[in-house]
Length: 199
Image 1 (cartoon, rainbow, N blue to C red):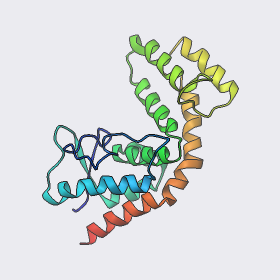
Image 2: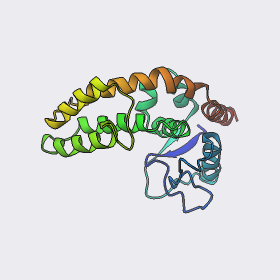
Image 3: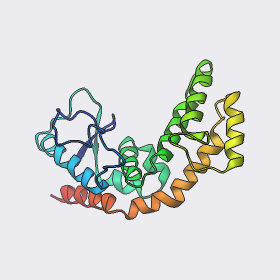
Image 4: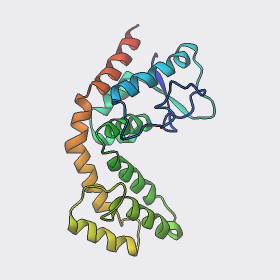
């Protein structure tokens, strides 16, 4: 079935082509292209791989189908369950300057799988990067939750960030996710895949 190849490693290293700036992760907030233009550029980079059936080397790839992209519209949970969905949604959030939400959510998912003897170090990193009041990627939670999360992070368990993660998930679900589904980027991607499927 026709579709697009998307890399699991955040769309990196596509045979070193200079015009694939998105794939190299060189998107800067001050001089950021529109998400649609970035995705279009990325898809253009992938056309030779699609047509020739060649996958980018040294990375795991998946075939992205219209059916999978349609499933993303069923729930935020289904979108985040897909590696490709995470990547596309993250690029959308970057265009809205709110990528810290998905980065925090993913960090929490990784944290839950951490061995107990490594919890303290990871908890400290997550707290410093996302939770503390002067964090570089500060998430949008209220003062009480910030204080409660800080206390839990000092004596970490696998559930230390659960409440904050749930709050950020709800924020994405109610705010960013509906806008993502209405965005030209998502609709154009879906349309492109459906057009290829019908060929």
